[in-house]
Every structure is written in structure tokens, then in C-alpha cells.
Image (cartoon, rainbow, N blue to C red):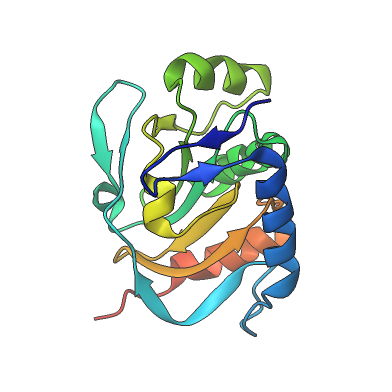
Length: 190
């Protein structure tokens, strides 16, 4: 298991440090009282999100803006991240339950090897419903202020961040699915 460190202020991650950071943040940041499940921290007001860029499996570049009009669960993960390995099947089941024109799980891998490491990993753990979105440059997590894996953002239909969860979660738990259904059913702000 190798760590990730790049110069010039870019994304830096060491697997053990990332896990410890995720655990500390998950315990230290209380969720706002809007019946947010697990350790999902909701903000008092939506926050802007940079228009991230990543690849589609086909090699086509996508932007986060391409998902406007949908509620998005944006998950940043890596194949070497043990908590990510446990979390990915729950995201896959969530996509199977709720995915469609109003909702999408966008799971972005920050592995440097791109699809050549992502494909076999996802096959090995039985992922079938999630689209494959690599960010082999690994720059996007730093733009989001995400310095631990996994980190997941809840994004509204207008592309604004409603909250985030640092560390793994069981995304297909009944309370999480019910909460996300309510987020999907919300009327867009005018």
C-alpha cells in the first residue's frame, strides 16, 4: 500500500493518515439537526462547489456541471483506501435504488493509474451500477478541501454543496435512503 504525495501544494494523502483524519472529523463534526443520517454534516446554507473535471470510462472529459438538474452524491475514493473498499458496494446499491434522471452517485477515483486500476478493482468487489469516473491527476480533491478518503459531498440540483461526510458510510441504510429521497423530492430553489 503506497501513500500519495505530490509537490506544489497539490493533493497529499497517506493511507493511514487519511483514515485517522476521517475518523477524527467524523467524530468531531456534529450533523445539523435536519435528521441527517450517520455522520453527514449539513450546512446552514448551500455552498458553491468548483466545477470539477474528471474522465468518463470512455475517456471523455466530464464536468460536475454536466450533472446539474440532479441531486448528486459525489464520492472521492481510491482503490488503496480500505474504508473505500467497504463503502463502494453500499454506493453501488444506492445507485441501483435511486439512480436516474433526478439522482446520481458520482464516484470519482483519485488513483493515478486511472481505468487500468479502477476496472479490475470494481470487478473484484462486484460493482455493477456505478459509472466509472477516474481523476488520474488527483487535483480535484484538493480543490474541494477534501484531504481524507473517502469524502462524500451532497450536491443539490443547482450544483451547490448541501453537506459532506468524511469517512465511510453505509449509503444504502434505510435512514440514508429515506433522507436522500427527501432531498430528491425537494423543490429546486428559484
